[in-house]
Length: 168
Image: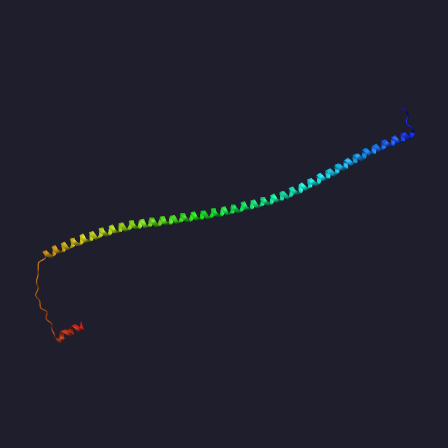
């Protein structure tokens, strides 16, 4: 093997340097490609992140709508429950009033019956007492002697007699 000449050595050194530069450039190119690829990935990820943020905001809005809808339904339900309680209270009060009226009517009918019985009893008692008193008066009158009185009334027309009465 021959020994290289200084020009060949120089060329070899230069080739080695160029190879090294080529390797560096290749690495830089790869790094640049990686950067471009990474930048594209970053851009894609940022785009996805933006889409996800939009989706999150839309989901929040939808959740708020659902919460408001649920709250409205809950308020309506509570309102209806309140109305139903009022209706039931009214019906209970009405039933109590109707029951009280029915009891009063029943008591009034009972009192009327008792009154009628007492009235009938008192009428019968009065009639018996009246009959007994008539019989008693008839028996007393039948036992009394009969007296006839003949009398004559004369009127005096004397003045003195009238004057005497006038001065008294």
